[in-house]
Structure formats: C-alpha cells, structure tokens
Length: 318
Image 1 (tube, rainbow, N blue to C red):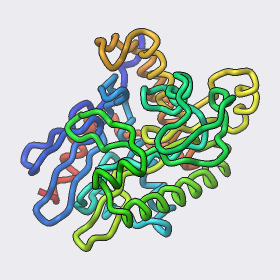
Image 2: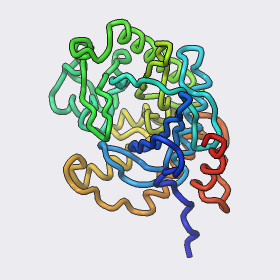
Image 3: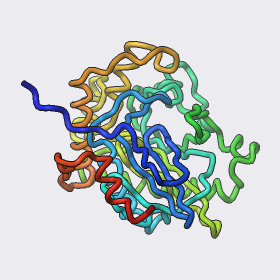
C-alpha cells in the first residue's frame, strides 16, 4: 500500500484578512498599513491556466526567492520586509509596472510566446530583436536579450512587446524602461554566475518591478525560482545539445510538454495529470531548491495542515 501523498496547498484563503486577491499561484492580502501578505500556494500554472497542485511547491518558491533576494539586494532593492512562514513573504505594497521583463540567453521554450516557438514558425524578428538563421533548438544566443510582455492581470494573457511599443503605449517612461532593463540584465548576470558555481545554467527568467510610495523602482514577486526561470544541468547540456535532445532541467517544462503533446492547452480542456507525474514534479521542485541554493529542504511538519500553520503564523498581522 502506498503512503498517502503529502498535503498540498490548493487554496490559501484566509478569512479575516483584508483585500484578498487570488492569482494563478499566489494569494495576496493588502494590509491597511502599506504592507502586503503574499502566500505561495502549491498551484502549478502554465499556458495561463492551472495544471495541477504540487505538494511543497509553494514553500520551494518562497524559500528559493528568499535565497536570491538576499543575494541580489545590492543590485536592485526589493519589496521584502520579512518571512513569517515558509510559504509567506510580507512585502511593501507597490504599484506594479505593467510590463514583465523576460531575459533569455538560449533559444528555448514551449509556450506560444517563447522565442523557440516563434523561431520554429519562421519568425526572425521578435520582441525588437532579429535572430540569425541557422540556430538550433536550445542553442545559446549571441548574447542575452530582453523579451518583454504585458503584465496580465486578472488571469489575462501576456502579450509580446517591443521596446518601441512599450514607450509608444505609455506603459513605461523612457527612464523606467532604461532602469528596469539595466536591473534585469544585471540580476540575470548575477543569477547566471551563482548558478554556474552550483553546476547549473540559468537559461531564462522573468522579473516584475513596481514603484513604492517614494517613487523608487523595486523588484517584486519572485526571482530565479523554478517557476519564473528555466534551469539546465550544466554537466549534461553539451552532450544533450549535440544529440538534439531536450536538456536536463529543473523546471516545469516536462509537465508543460506532456500537456502540450495531448491537447492545445490554450483551447482544449487539460487532461488529468497522472498522480505519479505530480509526485515526480514535487521531487523536481525539492531537488531544484537544493541544487540552486545548496541548502537542504526542510519539509513541513506532517501533523499540521499547511494552511493551519500559515493562519497561526499570520495571527499577529490581523
């Protein structure tokens, strides 16, 4: 008889806390004093939809982001104030800028807006960049590029943007665009350097920025997590690339690929994800945390539901 699966946090509703907003993965609560509670659930999102609920995923995301926030604060200030729970960050309330900044260093991806998908369709000019002919799947680009998109609120769809469109539509001022672009490239360079020291390749990642009450640009949401980033195993990448095979990874691409092979995930109903795939995905997230940070994962106590623990730890914030 198989042991029961560990509990997963599908819903982070906290009665009594104000201004609840349920995002694809995170539940947020806007406090009256200018702080915001961000609870990372175990929901796994791709193709602008929820695919599954994966045990321990929210804790991995929060603690991985914590590792990176602490190691990049000298490059860009961030929204973090404190961590009252393994799944929770208390942050400054920000006005989130309506553009996601995605940095890519390889021709990779599975979604409809990824540069690999667009390149396979014959496009060479995308996101304000022109890529050369003759690139192979998962090949390193001549240099890292920024591929911005609209920040989709209320479960909308992200849309590709060029720098010119960002400025013409007034989504960012020229000064804001210059600042977030410089921050993103510097953060990505730090991420690649520290990942390489751990035997990993940081392939691509997204950043979200916001403006605080003083008008400063701060890094928000998460940074260099398995959800916001693609990591490959450095040791096996050369052989996998030479053989035309998918690189070994620590991201959710294998579940996305499984779904995409069975339906049009932007249109069709998502097929039921097998239990063993969910369990393996949980292990992937834990392995990713340990590989990225060099720290052992501390699983939650089995005798207390995750949501009960979160409620207990957040009691002082009511």
